[in-house]
Structures are given as structure tokens and as C-alpha cells.
Image (tube, rainbow, N blue to C red; front, side, top):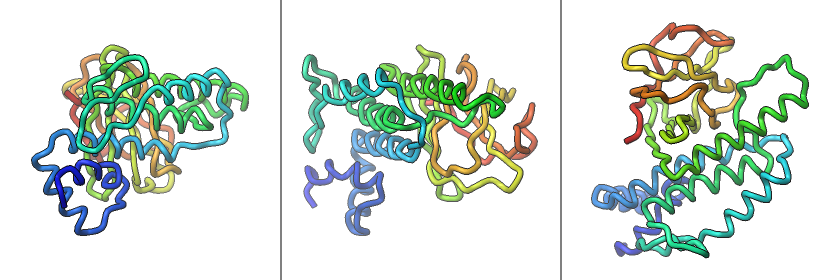
Length: 250
């Protein structure tokens, strides 16, 4: 297979849509192509967000904004080059990565998605919808931030986790793909690792294997992020060994 053909397979690789021979060839190519390696990680992060569709109706303003921004970016041709918005040029290593992730995330969320499960279930449905909509906008804002950086890891059970951080916004988003359900009566809890002190950063929805969580609190110089299994409702401190540990993306 020609090298120029291999450059075009990052999306299919992230979606597990390659044949065994194509996957093997592309993985050999990844060892020598940093651009394709980065692009594949970011496509994988974007696909994790596509499972977030829910029944919350988006605001007309949010939908209009998303649809307008998507039309201003063109796909890069196979083999590299630059992403060329209609009005200005954006370098490939900053433009493509951010727009692939942000466009998928914002479109999925803005066209009927909900950002997180963390809200007070005692509130009425109207308050929950308003809060979910606000979280959706904040989450998409982090992923579309010009300084957004990401790190993806593969977990022991085959699931994957991606951490996206905007230092400028002092916020982080945790993206999970194909995570096993926690035991009955348990929940996955997120933590910021403040150089040895674990600070709660919110709960994941135990009923959704693929989801995105806008982490609670600022990044505030944290060294990394951890995930533990805790009793329903969460804990004040981790009660067991982490199922995932990630350092902050550079």
C-alpha cells in the first residue's frame, strides 16, 4: 500500500473499520508518522462523544452557532497540508485536530445531546434541562478551545479514556469509550491528582459505557486524573485502587 494511501486511513482506523491487513500496515506506518498518530488519537476521542445523543432539546442559538461553524472548515486532503477555513488559514496540527474533535462533539451535543449526568436529581425537569444545556456549551467550549490538549490511554478491559484540558479556561473534560458497567450500587468517580492529594472531580453515569464528563473544579495545576469505583453518590476520598490513571497532556 502506498504511503499516500496510508495517510488517509486514520479515521477508519479509529472506527475499527480496517481489514486485518490494512490495520497492520497502518500501525506500522504510525510508528514513523507523528501526524497520523496524533490524528488517530483525536478521531478516537471524537467518536467517543458520538454516543452522547439524548432527548434534551438544544437552544436555537446553540444549534445555529454549531451549524455555522461547521460550514467554515474544509477537510484536509490525504497526505497532509493545511485546513483552510473560508476566511483564513489554520495550521494543520492546530486546526484539523481541534476541529475534528470539536465539530463532532458540538454537533452531537448541540443537535440533541446532554453534556453530563452530574446534576441534582431533586430539581424539576426544566431546571435539569437548563443545566444540561449550559454544561453542553461549557463542554464544547473546552474541546474547541485554541489551547485544548488531549491524552488518550487504553484501559485493561479494552476501553479507552481521553482527557482534554484547556489551561486557559482552567477546565478539563473526560471522555470514555466502551467502559464496563460498574458493579451494582457503585459508580465511577473522577479525581484530580494534586501531586498526591486526590480531589473529587465528579461522577460518571453508571449506565453509559461511552460518555463525556465536564470535570468539576479547575485544573489548578493538577498533575493528572484518576478514576475509581465508589459507592453510589461518590466518596470524599478514593476508597480503592484506581481503574485508570492519566497524566495531564503536554
